[in-house]
Length: 245
Image 1 (cartoon, helix red, strand yellow):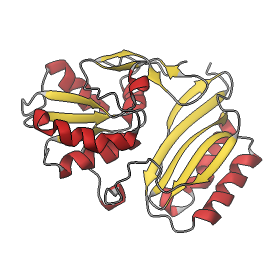
Image 2 (tube, rainbow, N blue to C red):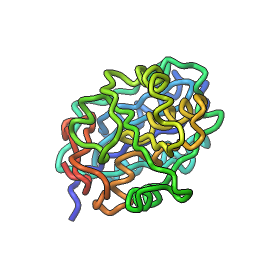
Image 3 (cartoon, rainbow, N blue to C red):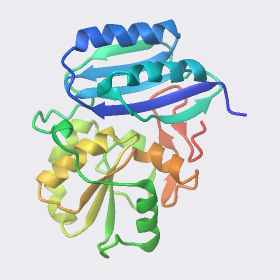
C-alpha cells in the first residue's frame, strides 16, 4: 500500500500574460485543499512542487489542466508518509528557472530530448546509436551532485544554475564530437542547458526527458549507470532510485 501523501513536480514552458490573476487562482485552489509546496510563475511558464493527500493533489492537477495552456501536463510522482513542505507558496518570478539569458526561450522551440529508456540503452552499450561516445553533463549545483550522479558525469561544481553558460563556453571544445546529455532533477534546468549547447555549436546534444526523477520512474528503480541518491528541495532531502526517502 502506498503512503498517503502524493508529491508531484512538473513544469511547462508556455507564454503566460495573466500572472497576477493566475497566481491568485492557483493559490486559492491549493489552499482549499490544504496542499503545501511551491508554485513558480513567470512569463515563460510554470514550475511547481506540491504535496498533499493523493485525491486532493489529483483534483488540483485536474483543475490546472482545465486551462488549455496546461492541458495534458504530466507530473513526476512520489509518495511519502508526511507532507515534506512547511507552507504553500505561489510566486511570480522573472524566470521559472533562473539562467539570466533572456534569449534562451524554450517556449520558442525545445532542444532534442532523449528518453530514459534510450539513455539506459546508450549507457549499457557505451555509445549512442551512431557510435558516438556519450557524455553525461550534470547541470545541478555541486551540493546536489554530492548526493548522487550518473557514473563519470561531468560536474563543474556549479554554485548556481546561472553559472552554467560560462562554464559551458569554457569547456565547449572538450565536448566536441561527443553526444552530450544534460541532466538535472526534474528536467527544467537541462531543457535550458540543451538549448545553450545547441547554440554553442554542439549539434549532438540532448536533454534527459523528465530528468533524474523520470529516469528512476521509467527504469523501475534500477537506474542503470546511476550511483547514490537524488537530492530534492524539500524535507525528504534525497530520494533513492525507487523514489523513496
